[in-house]
Length: 287
View 1 (cartoon, rainbow, N blue to C red):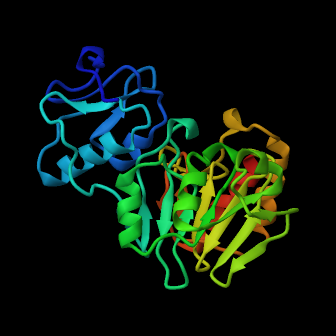
View 2 (cartoon, one colour):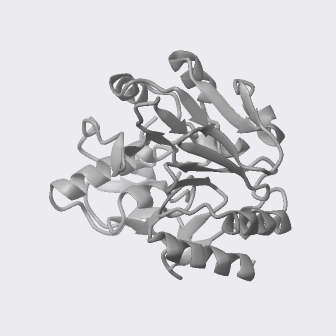
């Protein structure tokens, strides 16, 4: 499916680029096109202005390809910009795009490593992801942060022969998972990857820390640009807010640190490890 001009949200800036009213307000397009796409009074995405220059054009195409409801469109252009994804984010981390509606538009990532590439959560199944993954060396492990963002993980696991990891408490959502995490103690999946269970958002939510400083938080932790601190989603806590607070306290006290945060939902962010830690301690106190 494609965006429908007849359903265009008229709150957006006039011009060829638009978002239609089928938007589910998942924020994914805003994350890949900040300053270009914002929200209307109801929280649905709109173009704040029309793209101006090559950088804006790439961002607009990323928004088109990341949108899980295909709500971003252009009234004239039909062919997506080539290779808008995977999007390089530094440290050999890539946003995969092509977010799945079944995951409410959650982001997924690839971490390219000599020991074997790692996918964190899953995009929808498409050759536009499979092709680049082939070129980048495939996928050795798929790390699922929780039950909500599994999307088409089974197809990716079969295609690449990847080991799928999920916490046993959320494992019913991913029958393809062959590696089950248990309990609440940290587990080393590989020398460069530690899984830290954080029951709360769901019972089986997990943080994954790569290379001792790259944190993939799923829906358990995000950055709030408005208040400039770490946040959690109290209105989208499906298991226990008290458990999530206690889980994040355990993480804050674990000695594990991070200076880059990559989220499923919410805003990712870079900050020095000491400031992130202070913000996490503050978040736990506020929770």
